Image (cartoon, rainbow, N blue to C red):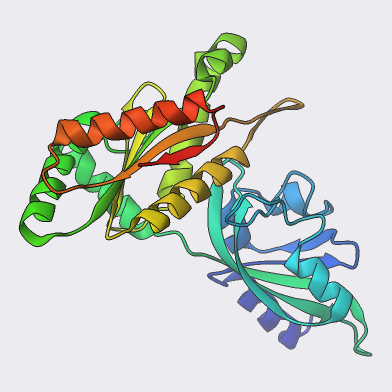
Length: 300
């Protein structure tokens, strides 16, 4: 290996962003350490496979699969044009992580396209969420299984947010969420697998939350999201994005792919609301979603 090649290798190995190379058929031929860190998949698990073989399985904010027809990297290999996109990749632990991807072509010495390059940046607010976890641990307000806020902390935060709304008219919304048919997962696969599903859902919230929002476990398979500075259309859009991302997340158990969906009740704070009013309204909207067929959001 010459000095120039050694320098290139060192740069690739020390990149903060994930980077992988594929051939024209999108078989992975290189996977850098940052890609391992961001996705949880090691180079040994990925190199030699196609990027859509239960590895990244990119989806967009509506939960649409991108790997077969809408893949930015495949389009770039086909027409030679660079592309950027914000999408959601599949982490080895099952949840979805938001990333910003940049796709470009891989060419030989003659300039012929022989594959593609994808550089991806983790755009989740990981550092802020890790700090939030440490703060919650100090306050003994952390749910030990999911590493989200527990019900005690959520109830206290709702009271604080209501007071802020009363004094300063700061808007916020509530997402009341429940996993669909969760009892069937426990009965079929056992409570240990059920716990893994709960943690997968929690990781999806954490990876896709803003620093000033709060997600917590209300109890059992129920979760609550407190979303600051948002209006009704934005709340519905956010809730449906989370619903789609969870629906496209999965755990592999042998050859079985375990997936779960959520139903959501979404509401904005209103003048005069008490905590009980807000929670009761969100809970009623959740059950409207359940009654309408599950895996949907009801806004009210």
